[in-house]
Amino acid sequence: MVGDRDVLVIYDERMLDHRPDMQQPFLDGRLNGRIRNVLDGLGLEAKWSYPEHPGRVTTVYDLLQAEPVAGTRLEAGRAATEDELARVHTTSYIENINELRGQQAWLDIDTTAVSPGSVEAAEVAAGSCIKAVDAVCGGMAGSAFVICRPPGHHANAVRARGFCLYNNIAVAAAHAQAGWDCERVLIIDWDAHHGNGTQDIFAADPSVLFFDTHRAAPFYPGTGLLEEVGDGLGEGTVVNVPLPDDTGDLAMVRAFRDILVPAAAWFQPDLILVSCGLDAHRSELCMNLSFEGFSALTGIVQKLADDYCDGRLVMALEGGYNPDTVARGVHTILEVMAGGEPAEPSEPGLTEVMEISEFHRSAFAQMDD
Ligand SMILES: [Zn+2]
Image 1 (cartoon, rainbow, N blue to C red):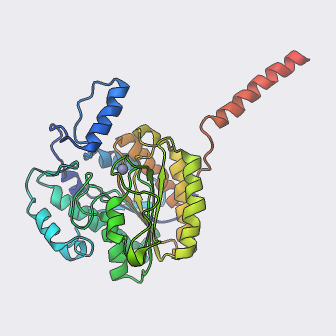
Image 2: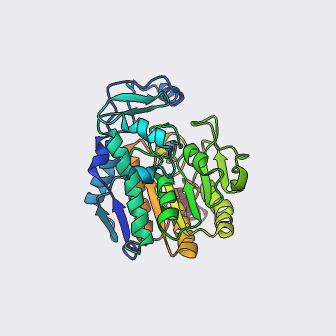
Image 3: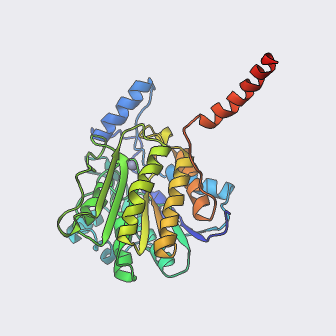
């Protein structure tokens, strides 16, 4: 039941100081164009502004205060050092980012901007994932969830992209390998967007298995094709599952059971990391999952961690731009990590149809009498 397991949740207010100018509209980028198309189609009069804002995580914090999840405890994070970042990013890239400290700038036309507090926020996001790995691998926590921002999975070794500065999950994986006895790390990315940066960083590394379900290209960032299976020595350790936009709970659970579970059995990971985006939830207009779907996926991943890694599991927040969805999604996931029973999703509406048909059936039975 919820509370049976011990889950460390990391939240740090320094990550709120990443505040790209909300009043400035997006530069013309592909994501902007696509979202505008969706909004235009809905007939909304929306002034578009930077969607990766502090409210995404304050809402999570507020919900966890209002509805605490038994078994979880909250701690502040820490900043990553340059050496820790340099395990996956080039030193010249880190220098370029450092020069932006205290500035307001568009970093990349691909939707990434910074404000004066952004560089420290990005260091704390990555460092908090390191702290989570240390807690789980050091036996101080059963599992951990990092409520981090800016997100990380679109950033590769040399470039910020898609709201991401440093690749938090990649920094965490490299730290687990350098600092702990984790030879093989499994990274699961269930964000609606392909984790192109994470794939780039580990594509040729056979010690990291990267499994990614996402809405298929040409959806942003346009990568994650089935044929992308890793490079060189890493061939076979990239597993992409590109899916249509109406993919829901049942299909996603099937992908995890039929593809991820045997892949994990083959790989025998020492640690499991999850790039936990909530934007595959149907309210985000990218894919069609429900909260029950996320609950079920968490159950599958937790079982893999129990089977292969003594339960060692770290999740880090990626995307999700409707704050209420992010908050309820994280809450749902934490309940399962803390020992709650995962949901068994069904076709939307099926339960209701069965109940309603029961209601009508009795009416018709009376008429027969
Ligand atoms: Zn995303």
